[in-house]
Length: 181
Image 1 (tube, rainbow, N blue to C red):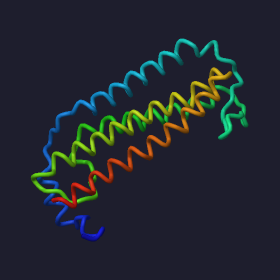
Image 2: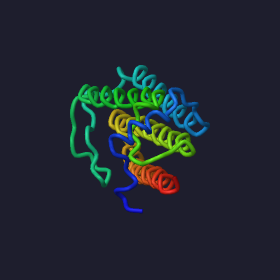
Image 3: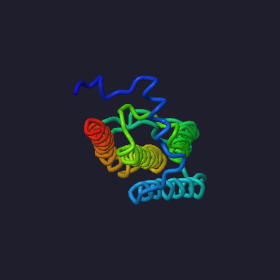
């Protein structure tokens, strides 16, 4: 089966959308990943709110690959980054409740529609969790500095490998299921 034959055309996509239920229950993994993201977001905001006044005005704003600080600036320069990451995270969380809005690039049928949707929801939950953890790892070390900067940079590199691996795994799993249907 060629790669092209796995992708539905517009007419087929309209027919496939009729198979998608309006409500899709959350599975355990999605709940756990979203729970980690929500708890991480709440802890992040509390940490910032309680400690903002104790943070120095000049903070490191960029840390290179080797863990060296190569840009300094005012702590308020981090606020747009925080807002952007929050908006992205909230949008990803909300989209999980509306499976008919999702774009699944592979064919599915009555037998595989729920499996494909659950895989897609897990992918969204994984990305949601990753966004919050990445926000924590990007901003908190810049605000509190010290040895935490180097530790966070190392953890961040590992997280990026997990993110790429996780997304690749889910897309390959969906492609495999599409080939079977």
